[in-house]
Each structure stands twice: as C-alpha cells, then as structure tokens.
Image 1 (cartoon, rainbow, N blue to C red):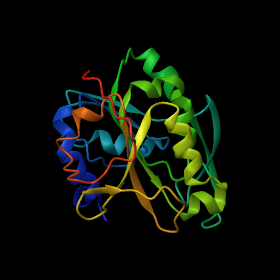
Image 2: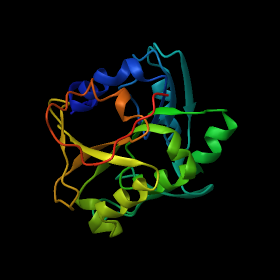
Image 3: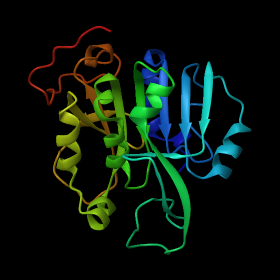
Image 4: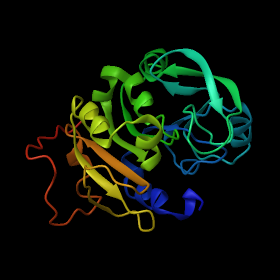
Length: 231
C-alpha cells in the first residue's frame, strides 16, 4: 500500500506544522514529504530512485537529494537488490550491487543542521545502523519513526529492546506504536513481536511540542519523568 494512503501520512499530517527540518532515510521513488513546506533531506543509495524522485512536484522550502544511504560508517557496502536492503536476508535473492553509506553525524555537521524535527527511517532492517551513525546528534532530533519486524530478529538477531536501550541514551523515553490504517498512536509493548510495526519515539526534551497534537487522551506515558523544554 502506498504510504500516501496509510497511517504514516495521517500521522505526519498531525505534526507537519511543527516540522521545519525532515530527514527521509530510505525514501525510495516517492515520499510522503513532497507536499510539505519544510526543508527535506532525502536519502536513498539507489541513484535511479533519487533521480525519479526529483521529477516529482515539490512544495518543500528546500529539497536535498542524496544518492547514498546512511549508516554507522563511511564506506561502500553490498546492497541486496531483491530485498532493497544492506542486510543479507533469509528471504530473497543474493544478488548485490555496491552502494555508499555515510554517517548522519558528519552529514549534519557539513550541512550546518542544528535540529531535525522528524527523522523517518525505512532502511529494511538497517535502522539501528542509521541511528548509530548520528551519534550524539540524536539529542537534537525531536521525533523518530522507524520500522521493526520479525525479519530484524531473524536475520540480524537484534531485539527491539536493543534499539530502545540505544535511543534511551539520547532521551527518547516515550514510545508508541503507529496504527497502519488510522495514523493513531497507542502505548507500545516494548517486547519483541512477530508482526511488522512502525514505532514513533519522542525525545523527552521536546515532547511538549507534540503532546497536544497527537491526542494521547488519558493514556499513561511510558516515561515517568517528562520534563520538556520548549525549544
């Protein structure tokens, strides 16, 4: 299903007026952000995807097209074409092409980026590597969306708790599951599951900027100590 018709778009519609700088990591040929008036940085290692994306009609204040992936190092690595992943999967073929990845921390420094309002990652099991590449700059990211599913554990032996523990170092204490159909958020079970899930994580410093928008109702927060700073 196209992301323009599902909960990803519906969720973004709720927060888009608070987003000035967006990173779309693993944008593929299309993006839910092309109608946004924000500054958007698009990343995909497949050059043809980026070139096709450039042909779209954009409302972005600034669009930056990057034909490389993000990861936890700067190097050229195999990309499995049948699964669209830098991870060798237990499903799909073994055919590869060599593509470049770069560290997000160095990219933001080179581009004088101070904050990222929304970091959306769709990297086909490479999500933790992408996050690690931002290093301490994750303290300056306000909202993160990433995918997690059974393939992550099956092929990488990475448990959800490992990703959670990593992000908690950078004040991402509030976690929610994104409803694929409605764009609503619910308190997420942080145990491993066997279903594909999009998770939304909020940086504690900035949570107050979004709390009134996302309609959490009376649901308890996962963090018992939310002390947001209005920045």
